[in-house]
Image (cartoon, rainbow, N blue to C red; front, side, top):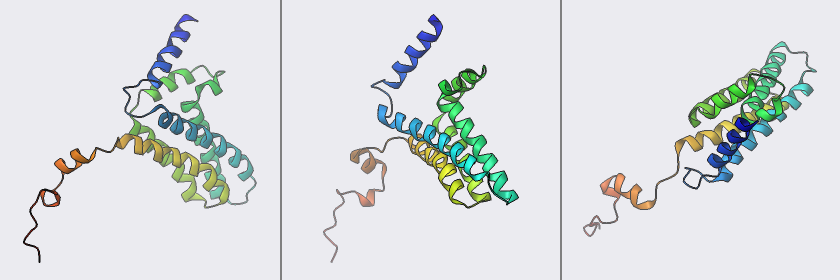
Length: 166
């Protein structure tokens, strides 16, 4: 019990670290959109199982699998009854942000490409949206104006004398 409590304490300190690259609300937004996307993909997947198209059935099953995987990765407390979820969640948290962006982006797009219906767009689209948020986080913060000007083309510098322009 003590190890679990110290793990939770360490995770809370990491989430509220003032020296982190992003504010706490951006990290929680990414997790929240991913969790919401997982539940929506499961919900719309159950509704979409009433179809006559084989490709849409495959897309819905992929969507539901992706939704369950996203919930397991982002909210392992929802799957406490499965023994190996904790190991998978720790592995997921140790990955780089662009890994999550790529995985969630691909998992969100494949069902949409297979079957363009409202239930796949709403369900898988939210998983894709969480991938986009993780992708923006992986890109990092934008530099301030002085760093941008120093790294840019000198022709665009405001210090260039442009008096000979007619």
